[in-house]
Length: 464
Image (cartoon, rainbow, N blue to C red):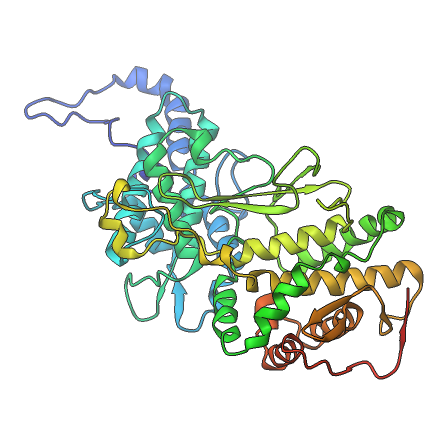
């Protein structure tokens, strides 16, 4: 029987023939074989069910609802991560992934520190190859159900399918790619927890981990924005003033029912545009009972599992008593999820240090107001348009929600909202940080942050 993906994930403990010297194979009498044939055939079909070449019947239809179509999974992952559009990198072929699984011969596992940071390419493959081996080992676990064992196989295959390498090489992976980093995270976690299904695969509502495609998708755009903002002294001043001004929550509780309904429709359109298909990305809660409401909590410390938690107040309540539509809050927070690098902030050389020798390193992301700039501007423009839609006001009209103070200069929040709404229309980027990093936008924010308040709106303006 030819080796295949499914049987390759099994251990080699079950043998058909004896392997000891001078021990003859056990042979069943023909009479018994004849009676047992139907059962033997069924067993053989089970073992070969997930082979890419045995997936389809003559009509190109799956043989059974219980079988796993790895070929279909492979192409779904390639499409989801848009890997065929890469210029300098490429995904591994399905045959290459099958070969990794079937002919798995991992190097000695020496990295046990669970620090979420690949030291180098060799360390990356050490974790991945040993993770493939661990996937096979858990197939013999008495604590796992058949369904759970199959899930281990499927997730491992997905993680291998999302990897990319530099074109023209055999296995030179780019360790800055968010998809490669998440593959490393998954197999690192599997090696630590093995057949502990709850730790490895079980997922509660609002818990986002390395299996979510959006996690870290645009972290490089955020890092680029951080670097570019250093050349504009007023941008950081603007970001700080905007985020800390609660006048930006212009919608009231009187508008809440309609605003929540409309914002959820906009959320669905945004998710579709972003091609986000992951489910259960958030949970509903209340600010009175949950200190993490309306925020992304991010855990990445050495020795703990890398994951994010996202809960939103089901009514749109904000801590200070303000209101923001639920859909707007979710878009804002999911933009933060896409900003975060799926790795610890440790340095590669820290991999050689023991747990006791590495102090907790906080992410520079959490210490910068620039991380709030794009999501807050987006929320401001979105809520401004919601307010105007509810009250029948022209989109271009500047309303008086409040002002931002820069030295002796004041800037209307309504003017910023209208301006950034136009920038969203002008530059239809999926990444809000890539949008904000446009020279035209940074230059305008820089002028405002340095107190140079030029009027962009020469016509329509009114009080609410």
